[in-house]
Image 1 (cartoon, rainbow, N blue to C red):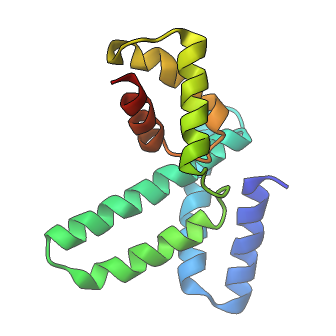
Image 2 (image 1 turned 30 degrees about the vertical axis):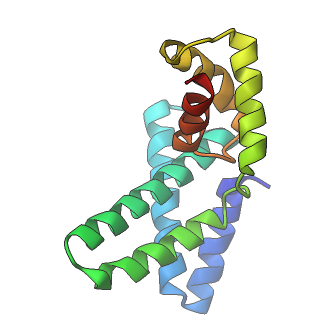
Length: 147
């Protein structure tokens, strides 16, 4: 099953059960996926849908940070709930040691020796992660290994 099908099924279930938080989060994710498909002019592949969900999770994490800076603790629980809902559709996270091993392999494949070559390493590494680690996590691992 594709992520989009899973999201559509979850939306139907949320509507039937009256779960407003899930309904709102899943509907927003589906809308963003459909907008990306319209912009692209073709359906998103599985990795594209995963990337859209990760982008939404990142956006909610930023909203939590903004709420903390603005001293608005009332805005934090809904954002955390939305993160939990969206993460349920993402593959499980990659353990740090596995991420480091993939980063080491990408560095070896590209022959990178300095931080200046990080872009080339990231181009090789990101497709291998298959949405199981964020770009931030990958770049931190690569940066740590190249320094």
